[in-house]
Image (cartoon, rainbow over all chains, first blue to last red; front, top):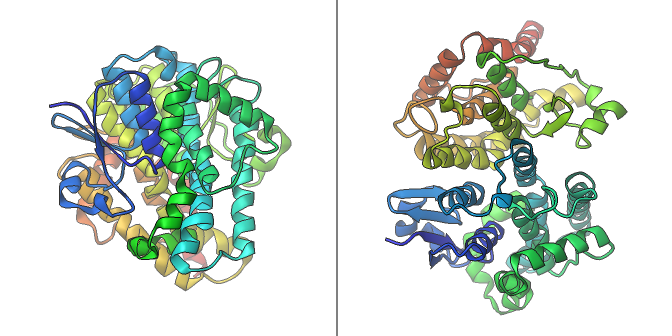
Length: 241
Length: 212
């Protein structure tokens, strides 16, 4: 049985896994799970991943959730080039440091911005109050500042001279608010230059393909029936609003 | 606080050499500390000039660099993936939900002098409850430890977060025998370092009891 990756490219960590697998020519079966339509709540998917989140991996009998361990597992199994997750202990620690920090920083605030700008207004039928937006923007900016000042500094990539899992995980979170119409790169030449390098390293065609859905999110949202989002309403409002 | 305890337990159990710098409240906001960590958080590791933040990154670095028993962070890819899966999930589940209870019951009232916000606490306890359900059904299941038959860094991170609400005298595992048994196994595996790491937290609890 081929290796299966359960993905929805609207989801940031799914995009990281997708780009990593394609870039490294890892053979896999793309199993689409539409979050918007609640497909992650189905019985079949629950057997693969009790946590009911995407991305998920199934390799024979072995099932795994969480994008970071999925990519590390793939890197090991398919012996991808060392720079993705270096064996050198210091380089690896630097990448692990970013991978750890980002969960409750850029990931949280980038996601929040996406929901506040695009999805919540659709759910509740009106714009989010200004103070909430301002607060969310400040948090997002603080994370972006830390990415530039602590994690990038004057390096080409987060881990050093070459791209790594840290950049793959970072770029998708930084791009998420862009999908909601917020240009986070405006006024940030260092971040923009890093994004360009990441895009070239991954391959512009693959990068653009992986980001097509999220960059078209505003248009897609315009066509969606608010009823579709009822599934998420209580949880999202509690978490983000 | 919890990530620092996890580190301290690990350090002692592995009998490695090194210095632990204890940071008291407020010291993390000084200019010197900010140079080490602009996020002004603990733990921070400095190993021969190499500065590293984030407890799970530090634990994985120590497990790799020093001669610790392999079970802490297994090398076999599928076993390691299980540990990595927990440590990733931990950030947005166990950690924030347990920490929130501690913050609402101990930290905020101490800092502001206001009484506990009971509405927020109720919601936080309910979210924590859902997280503990997932911990039992998705990770622990019928295993002795979160990721299998042996203790790993995942158990270290988890147990320290779940101990944190004890600062207010609240045992969140009170009605969960499966997780209580797991906690006992973790405590046995860690020996003295477990109590030593939690000394400050238990002192907070005892001081509060003394005041009531």
